[in-house]
Length: 532
Image 1 (spheres, rainbow, N blue to C red):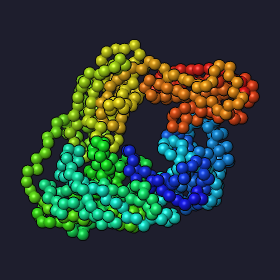
Image 2: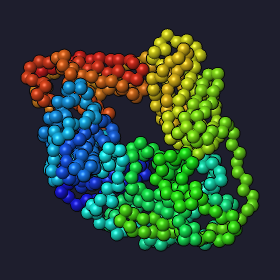
Image 3: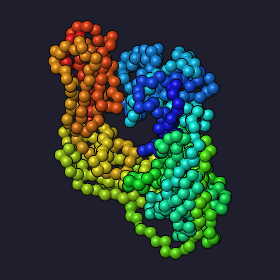
Image 4: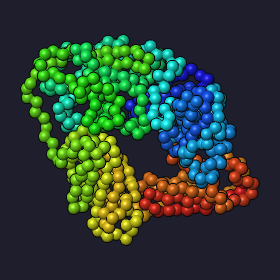
């Protein structure tokens, strides 16, 4: 970018339901800084979306790798013209398309874009990735010799202790404070007495770079038993197909209850696309001998700066009673389900990270739009690795079954989907346990054009903004035409649909038509006449 690289986030950093898959490079709180090609190649792909990357460029390089630049405010002129033409051809603002090989070539250091804050960005920065091709696996950019000063080791915050003889989701882990600094740490208790012969450990901590206090992700963690490596993780390569596996790498229930991230140093049984390496079968610690074991956990950053946490443990058999759990037992790798006369839930073989009991509860729904009871299955402190199929029976006939939605509900949060029907059974897929119900939606979206009235004179205006709201907060389709021709409205962060006046709106009187449709299929339309 022509400025020193300072990181707001690194590769493998922990995020909600995903690893951070590249580097977030600070842009000194500014937008529209020039972004240059990292190496020779050609523009391979572009993506435009309201969340996620916002506006992104993919460059394929002569060495077979692909670099990605995201949250951009604008593309360089030749690419911007090509993209705009493609959007009008497809009649879509949000697009993801490949460019013909060699159409737009770049040399290292060529201007390709301007930085910004578009998409799922919460502040100005450049998101940068390096991927292998054609398998599209993200590689850690910190391993490519970027000029980033880093002489600071990772920091330990606390230690989590788990019983690997039990389901990860059906136990109460112990959290042990640690003390130390400058790469040398120990537990506050000199000896940990454990009631399990097969413990697993998790660590809470972070990493930094020289000159920055920003807490970033940890590159590598390994647990040693009497100086013998047992298991650990390394953030060197992860694909987007695997990124949801973060929920098996962290103590998900503790974090969902408001606790910190604990990164596990052992692999859960259902974590199929794993960042882990095991030197002993299953990565198990065996303390059955009853002796004192010296445990060392080593953390490293991508530049090799180490931190070590050392402590002693001993297994003492004793009262190791645990709470009992009700509900049907489910296991990773199995296709199974739970059926009742009015609801059913089906889990595929890739849904669970560990075995556990799942409870089912039926309650009366509140709200005038609800047309079924609420059916709860599992709870939101248990992560799903893959989508679960949910079926709900519509008990009482209604006049507008085509306007029925299936809802996932978690307190004030919810998600709606248009179900498929088989007789009176509605079916949809969700990626969370929780509560589910059917609701009818016959209310169309509301379209507003703030500050613009019918027959307005917009000669001094630079844009038109359209705000669309929906009672279920999900606008599925938006379309605008000017004098019968499709018109490009952007929708960054899904806040408003915005058209910037350009060559597609000549001087004179015009008719703008706006159409919006919600998830249930309810539609609204507004017509506005104005003069330019």
